[in-house]
Image (cartoon, rainbow, N blue to C red; front, side, top):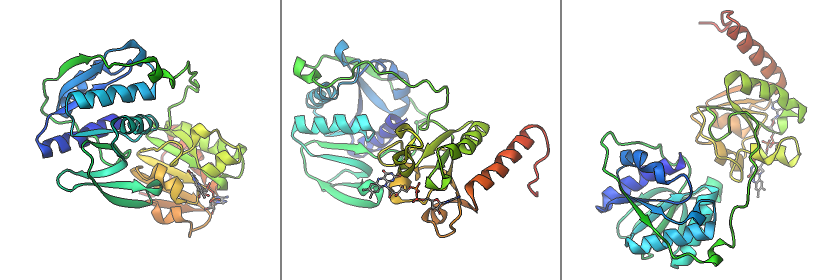
Length: 317
Ligand SMILES: Cc1cc2nc3c(=O)[nH]c(=O)nc-3n(C[C@H](O)[C@H](O)[C@H](O)COP(=O)(O)OP(=O)(O)OC[C@H]3O[C@@H](n4cnc5c(N)ncnc54)[C@H](O)[C@@H]3O)c2cc1C
């Protein structure tokens, strides 16, 4: 998803500077991407041809990207500002001896080459002028909506073999075990029910779980909640956790601190449930219910179950 946002932005920039848009695929899943890339205006897909790159290895991936950028004489290299994207692109910058402008939201190529980028977790937007020979950027998640073009390009797939050595693999992914919760992930969920300190306890999240199940969504939380040990870090929605972009974010007992809002501001709609009408989240939400979260959710869950069971909604027309 984030890669498609980067392709959308990169396509606009390539058009602006009159250069072809080229993509690089590293790792086990990239080689089959030519089909989708053709709807994003890509002319060439470079596939790094070394089996050791199949698993995540940030220094080696960066080596491959830097080498390719030199080979194709790239003017601008754009990556995602995901955890991995940020790590790899920082290594690319170090290798190429050029600065990295991270978390860009707008890119205006020209002289000066201007970017707008998020600082301080998105609470500040900075205009930066980049003078480096190669402009190295990451695009902030959800800075724009990914848009495929109705016309398709012919994508030439080209293998390249970077000159890697063992030192490039000093940092690499060792076998990982994925938690099989059988539930939809926070990043993919169309509805996220987030809980904050106002939920009251770990047990208090049962009503949020129930609502998420009823709506086919996922449960998230604020950092206060993970610090209290009520939920695991993997549930955290914010600048240091998952950044979400659901259709609906239901923020329950969350005050709306800036660090939390960075993680949920891409939600299409926010519904706040809070006892305090002056809580910052209430001002930032599209809808708010002022009341005790457990009482509100008990009523909401009961109503959804009633309607799902075939009873007419009690909501006035
Ligand atoms: C350097 C720094 C970095 C930080 N980084 C992060 C970060 O990455 N992510 C993050 O989330 N936070 C971060 N924080 C903390 C952040 O500033 C907030 O303190 C935190 O997000 C607050 O979490 P909360 O909204 O759950 O709790 P609170 O701020 O305590 O808010 C609880 C809310 O629940 C409401 N409430 C209480 N009882 C009820 C009830 N019964 N029913 C309904 N509503 C109720 C209250 O009115 C209040 O609005 C950081 C702080 C610092 C200083």
